Image 1 (cartoon, rainbow, N blue to C red):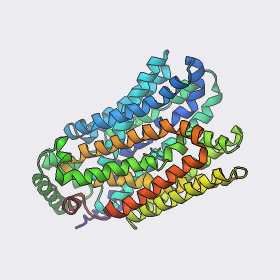
Image 2 (image 1 turned 90 degrees about the horizontal axis):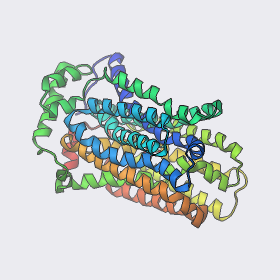
Image 3 (image 1 turned 90 degrees about the vertical axis):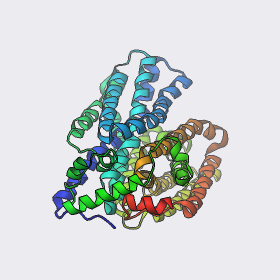
Amino acid sequence: MVSEWKAGSEVKLYVLVISAVAALGGFLFGFDTAVISGVNPFIREFFGLNEIMLGWANSSLILGAVLGTQVAGKPGDLLGRKRTLMLTALLFFVSAMGSAMAMSFTEFVIYRLIGGVAVGAASVISPIYIAEIAPAEHRGRLVALNQLTIVTGIFVSFFTNYRLEGIGSDNWRWMLGIEGIPALLFLGLLVFVPESPRWLVVKGRWQRAQEVMQKWMGEGEALQEIRRIREAHSAAEKATFLEVLRPRYRRLAAIGIILAVLQQFTGINVIMYYAPLIFERAGFGTGSALLQTIAVGAVNLVFTILAMRLVDRVGRRPLLLVGAGAMSLSLFTLSMVFFAEMLEGYWVLVFILGFIASFAVSFGPVVWVLISEIYPNNVRGIAVSLATLGLWSANFIVTGTFPSMLASWDGGLAFLFYAVINLGSLIFVWFFVPETKGLSLEELETSLAS
Ligand code: BGC
């Protein structure tokens, strides 16, 4: 049975506002991953970096994120979602200030690693928190809000980089340091959000869970919901890391991890991080790179909003299937454009934008939605951290190998490779990914575990 909203739009607004606060973790995740693109040329000069060191300046954040996904699950389950998010906000702040004021390259890398830990942790805990407070019928849209803030963070960092570029030799310090403002805002606003009621129930704090739930549900309904969560919880054993690998969870764990890895193997960050390089390959002057970057950011934003409107109506599976098909087709045609050397004109831009739109309406938000909701309450923290570990490790591999792929294979073969992977994703989704639309987390627990 689907839970009812307590009457009144004020209540809806309350859930929306606390979800938006948690989703600020996504904003910082997006900002932190993308800001480096504008910082690169200046730190290269300031610290005197060679190619390998510059690569390390970029990948240190992703490596930190891999680590962050692993350290976040435990405190997320032990201290609660809210306190873990507060710790994450603090790390974002420390990283922004530290990297902005770094006097040596080692110092710079250490603070970027710390930022990475925050990115990884936020990518685990923000979606979990939102999924746990959201009523079933709006959960998809509310978790997708986190993707909207990721995409907004990316867009804002492109924009602040552009505005700050001309302010003098300390420009890169300001590009990085400015993130301290949203980090502090995140920390300050988190003080006002309640702890996740599902986490409170699992910890035996039913009274508090009831108080929290009654903010958006009637008393009777909150009691019923708590009973359902308690039943679902006591039917399951205590979770440890190995528990997730037990037969009853193994299948779901595998689906979550594979989906997370496939999200990165769509090739999305190849475009996000290397768009200027690709456009250059296609013969565009660097002058138009900014315009194209803005087009990429804008299409990403618009189609993420479309996904938010669709995810609870048409469901997760249709979006993933259509998206994978459309991504495969866009990349296939893009590879043909490179093979046929039809690089003049705007074909490259058109197919890249087609690819971004297909990702933004499907794998971008929907993968985060699914991995936050398919696991039972008691293993959710650990299972999500495993799936996001897969996601960040895949990101590390894809973005690390792309420059040499482009150099030795050229665009045609490189994009054909990702087109084929997206076709594989379509087949995987068709056979293995369950539909979760409209069911409460406890109902999913019963239906997916069997
Ligand atoms: C992915 C990121 C990606 C972003 C782009 C997210 O869902 O996890 O790796 O950069 O979407 O919009």
